[in-house]
Image 1 (cartoon, rainbow, N blue to C red):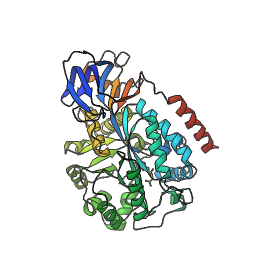
Image 2 (cartoon, rainbow, N blue to C red):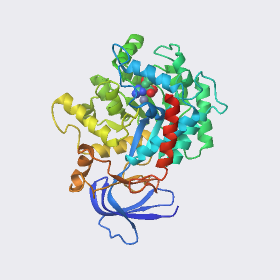
Image 3 (cartoon, rainbow, N blue to C red):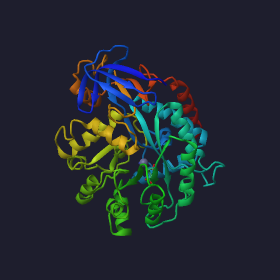
Image 4 (cartoon, rainbow, N blue to C red):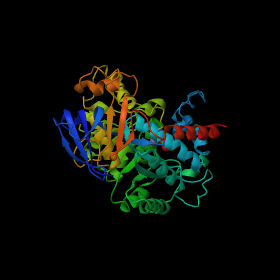
Length: 444
Ligand code: NGQ
Ligand code: ZN
C-alpha cells in the first residue's frame, strides 16, 4: 500500500467537527497528517462525513447464528440461566467450518454498521466432548481467518475457562468445549502470537465463576502486556453467589485480587455498589457495556450516569449479536439512563467519541480518534440521505443514533484500506450464503 490522501467536507476530530479535512495515511495504514480547512488538491474525495470507526469490544461470534431463536419462554421463569442452557446446546454443535462461516458474515455486518475493530471473547476451543483438535488453536484460527476475510481489525481474546462456578466448582458437560488449565492456555496463546506476527492476542478470563485467584495470578505473571478482559457482575444471582463464596461482591473481589488498571476491560459490570463504581472509575479500566444483550438477557442497568461523572471509561460491544448496530448500543445506553432517572439527555453529548476511545483502549488498538499516529479506521456517514440530510455537523451523531432509519454507513476504512464502499462489501453475498448454509445445518 502506498501513501493515500483523502478529503472530506466534514470530519470529527478530537477537538470537535472540522470542515474541509484532508487526511494523509501512510503506507502502514496509520494517519500521518490531518489538515482542516484544506483544499482537496490531489486527495481522493470522500462522500459523507467522517467519524472515527468504533471498536466492538465484546463479541461471541457463534451466537449470531442463534440470535432471535431463544425468545420463546422455555421455563416457568425464563432467565439468563435458561438462555445459557440453550446457548450451550447450540455451541456444542458448531464445527470449525461453521464458526468461520458465521464469524465471516458477522464481521462484514459489523463493518457495514460502522464497527472497524472487534474483540472476540473466544471460548469455543475444543470439540464438544472436550477432545482436543489436532491443532489446539483450530477454533482460534477460524476466527483469525474470518476477520482477515472480512477485513475487520481483530483483537483476539482466547478465554481461560476452568471451572463451572465460584469456589472451583466442577464444570458441567455443556462446558467441556471451553476448558483449559493454565499451562495449556498459555501455550495456545503463545502459539497464536508466534504464528501471526502483528495479531493482537489478549488475555481473557471468562468470569470469576470460571477461574480462581491463583490462575489469575499465574496468567497475569506470564502476560505483562496487552488487554485483559473478564465478564463480571452481570447477573444478580452471580453477585449473591460471589458473596456467599467470598464475602465480597465480584468487582470488589477482583479489585482486591488483581491489579486492575487501564489494560483491563470489565465486561458488563452491571451490578456495582457505590464503592465499587467509584473504584472502577478510578482504576482506569474500561467498562465493557453491551446494552442490547444486557436488555435481552434481563441483566440490569449499569449505573452509567454516576460512573461517567466520576471519570469512568467505557466502550460498547454487541456480545450475543441480537443487534449488530453501534447506534442501537449507544441509544439503549442513553435510554436506560433516561428510564432510570426520569430525565432526558443524561449522558454527555460526546457519547460516541467516548465509546470510540474507550473501545480502542479495551482492544489496545491505537485508534478511536482521527488524529496523527492513530490507525486509519474511518467511517463515512451518508448525509445525502434522510434522516441525516438536513442535520448540521454538531447534531449529526445525535441524528444518526436517535433518528433511526437506515445505517447510512457509506464507506468504511480499516488500517487505511476501504472495506465497504457505497454501503457494500465485496464479499457480502458469498459470506451470507456460507452463513445461511452453516445456520441451516446447525438448526437441522
Ligand atoms: C457467554 N454471555 O459466555 O457467552 C456469556 C454467558 C456465562 C453473556 N454473559 C455465559 N452475555 O456468562 O456463563
Ligand atoms: Zn460475553
